[in-house]
Length: 359
Image (cartoon, rainbow, N blue to C red; front, side, top):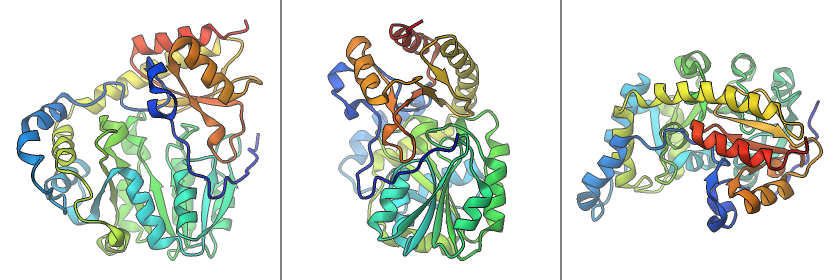
């Protein structure tokens, strides 16, 4: 079913997380899709070890050690890497640098692309998803003459990979149109190396790949994001960067997290197993219809229910918070998004949903 697209122009994005509601009510947050293992043990230890020395010191404004660690992790030259105060900061850099007149955004997708583009003064041309999948040909057509395009793989909130379509788009769009490819969730899909465009980054001078340590390494509260693109594009991208944008403890934690090499493979195994368990379990309920997903989250159709009302009722009765998807442009009011977590937490979510099942 093609999703109706209605822009929430100039409206601030709504996000999930415990502070999106009364935090005192939240016993389990299934609205934020973070690594089910949480923060790596080495990252916590790095914060504890370095807090006394780093807290009174200005951080390295160039994030040199963090970039070196990311360079080894990605097998990309450090000059191709820019570090931001979360991926969010880099989205706004990109819009300020390149979204001058018109941008193309599939919908539904992450709302900050739209807001950042509007803040930069650009008009947004939406391309509706078809059955939650990218319409590559329509995106390519709409991108003619556009300053920029925003793509997300796997897409948020649908959770579906679109690697084949994205490759087609990137190869077909004119090089004058800059592309931000958000891969912030890609490290938690089953085969990230086969799905990512990083191994093709040198072939495209107009491509910026966005990543984050938020989802993959559980550093949401520390705000560490980064991008990969050619150095010339990186200079233009970070022209609006403020000094000391990534704090010292965040940099130290990021370096330590990247050194804990088994953290992501273990998390991917949990996500793969638990996504199937949770999806199949919800699918047996009569009031909920889960969508297919490749990520560590998936959509659930409330079968006629209202997502805002359901989120609030579920939270009040069970203490479990899910993501109300009505705030995504083009999404409608019948979907929630749930995070795939560790088994015990998934059982808690399932029990909460069962309490609202009409079957």
